[in-house]
Image 1: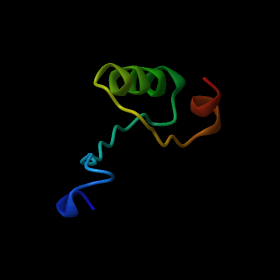
Image 2: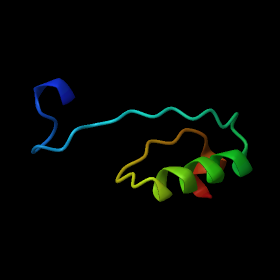
Image 3: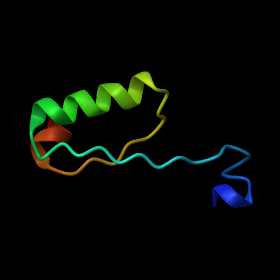
Image 4: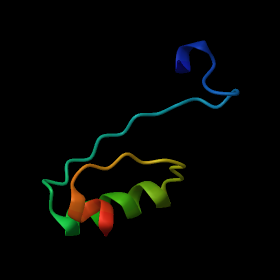
Length: 51
């Protein structure tokens, strides 16, 4: 999709961060993505999603 110009002209970037299903690392990953300007995240693991 990015090779075709992205979504409405915005290129997509996929970033994978291993959190090992631990809340501390999951929150740290979320904060890092937010700081870097992420507009969407997809998280797995109930404790991390609730955090």
